[in-house]
Length: 138
View 1 (spheres, rainbow, N blue to C red):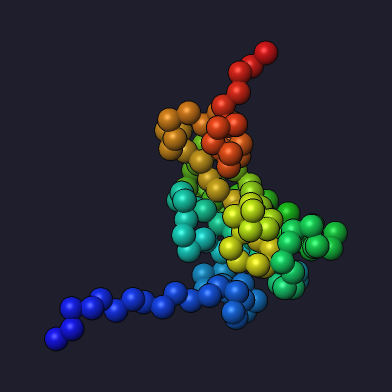
View 2 (cartoon, rainbow, N blue to C red):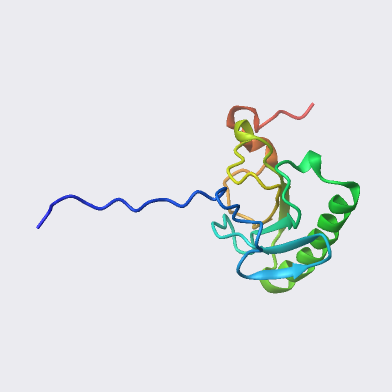
């Protein structure tokens, strides 16, 4: 009996693209985009909105695709409010590997926030650069 531990081969989310065939658990969709709960949610209700057309970066979306995504963001907020009752939200997009994008298909995160989920939420999305997150009010 071998004492070696088998290492599970990790799936490359870009080959084939994880988002091109729709996600399991799609909650909403329209002609140009769909949404679903994030598989690696950072909070209850964490959702991603994904354009149906394969495009790597948010800045490459057409105005119609951006509008379709925004429509789903607003509809998802209503669903998340009803089911999870968050106290706030962060909306975010990672663009490029330097910003942490790991799936090279544009997608928008809707992250519900809850009182006490972090010690000090001041700075919100600024926490992507932890040493820059907290600022002094003038």
